[in-house]
Image (tube, rainbow, N blue to C red; front, side, top):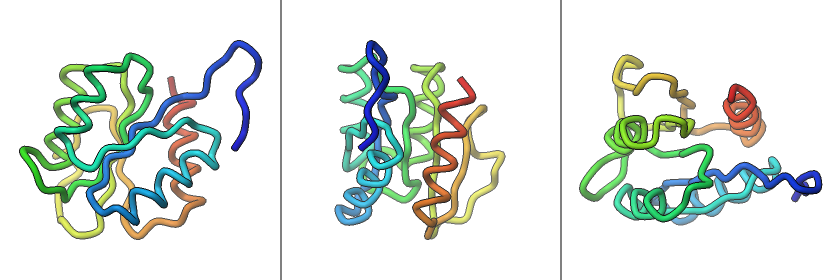
Length: 128
């Protein structure tokens, strides 16, 4: 993993994915891209982490998840409660309209290449 310059911490990315293997792979890619990754298996766990931490720069969430809300509802909740946090939504199953995404969020289709995910994450973080 890349290290941050002295005195500067790595951006924190919250990976929200209910499929354990996909979550492990996504966390690995996020960390290899030079970010700090934390993970949640559903939106409820993600919201709990967001309420506890003030250092999350980006939420990377799948749309299709069980629980009280799916990834789109989570993305809207993040936009409403934590407006500065960047949002990357991914999906390979659920059809949706780009207009369903909250403002200032990005979408990546599954299956994605690790290099495409890294490029998207770096682009989103750099747009701060």
